[in-house]
Length: 244
Ligand code: 16G
Figure 1: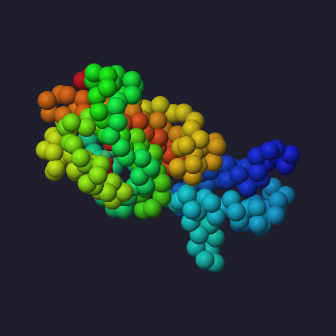
Figure 2 (figure 1 turned 120 degrees about the horizontal axis):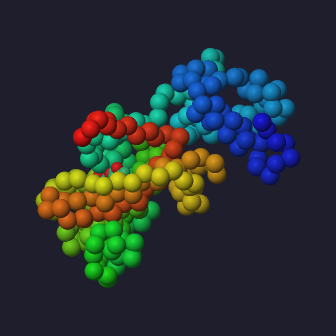
Figure 3 (figure 1 turned 30 degrees about the vertical axis):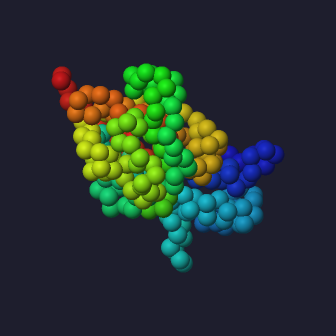
């Protein structure tokens, strides 16, 4: 399981081992994982190495420890129902978690060709680009880059602090935009180096890539979003009715 001669550090291999066992249900939710001593013996590594792996998984929210009792698998991934269109902020509040963001980039600039194609815009159209790490209870769960047609809600980049405020709330309350529906695509893929850094990921953590085009009540596309959700912290549910 652990390759002592690999270029991948031993503590990363141990993290991967624990993570894979959680994903496979070998270490079920709320169960106690083997002790540091047992893991150190099993893999012939120092307890310090095991402890580094476990501490990082605690930081990432996958494990938690009870003093004197051991280390336990934290409960469920963030589970989002694909039934209604919600914003990240609304979704987190509904779940009883605290939403916040780390703004990596916020500017008004001419749309890239990817964005003009997605939003059916003439080339050169000005858009607001907002790149944020989205956090749930201070844990990074997604990296999102939103592109909004600047003319529909001008000046918001300078006026608002999107590390705390909700983009959809600003669009609704300040610019009267009625978001009606969105088209989303999901794909699993490897994280880019930027995503790995922003989401504190190990190289092998899977990513759920989502692209969304959001439409207003007049059926005009107003937002194009590319996001990377942590595959180990997120799960989406959909209700599918037969024959509709
Ligand atoms: C969600 C949306 C994103 C939108 C954001 C607004 C998905 C995949 N994405 O994260 O398109 O820009 O909410 O969030 O659901 P905010 O209002 O909290 O800023």
